[in-house]
Amino acid sequence: ETSQCPLRQEGSPLTSGWYDSTPPPEVVEAVGVAPEGAHLVASGLSTEVVETILQSRAPSTRKLYAWKWILFTSWCGVRQLDPVHFPVGTVLEFLQARFATGLTHSTLKVYVAAIAAFHSPLGGQSVGKHPLVTRFLHSALRLRPPVRSRVPTWDLAVVLEALCKLPFEPLEEVSDRTLTLKAVFLLAISSLKRVGDLQALSVAPSHLDFAPGMAKAFLYPRPGTLL
Image (cartoon, rainbow, N blue to C red; front, side, top):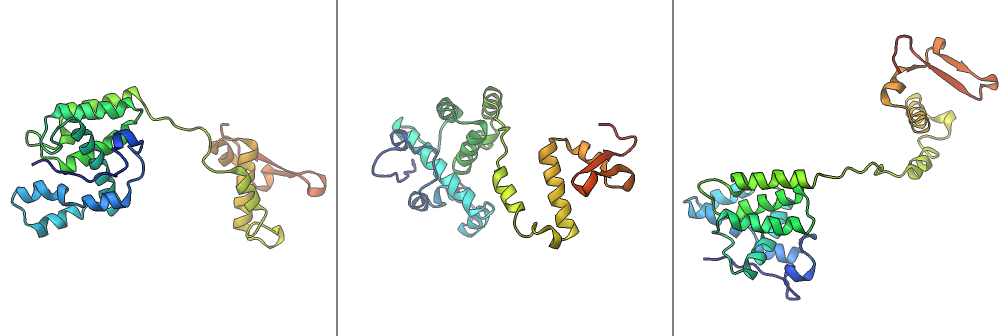
């Protein structure tokens, strides 16, 4: 029997533009864990055993899987397909449709994991371990590799402002450790040196000079250190 999943009254996820948004709590709670454990119960396991097995996933993961399952069953419903019992070609067509909208490899993997949690095994193995599914995911990764941002995720202005307050100021009252952390950070951010370059510097008397009036300090690398 094809499982039915509740959807928002204002429209299908195929037309409402909320395909991969945060799962609405009322929708996820309506699905619950019954569909996920249905095939486990059908295999002969008791309800108590199934409930214990389902606790292997964090509540947030279970909600996310339930939401992805809702989206998959909605896609199947439009095409009059059974979301529980289907050939591997069905899940591949669904993944291709999701991939065509710009989804990345990591998001597609979540879909596969969610479908595998609710779906009956294919040929005795999980949907996620089917050779064609794994090849599809590998291809998706090659075609759309993750983009790594070169822009820091932190705000330099916020950090500099914090360094002007407790526990980094006033300098006469801060500990040696706190002062060292502040000095190292300011040196790193102002010199743009690599970690190896900074490690080569030394505050030993033979490698440290001060300008007249102690207005500036000059650090020199240790002998034998390659910069």
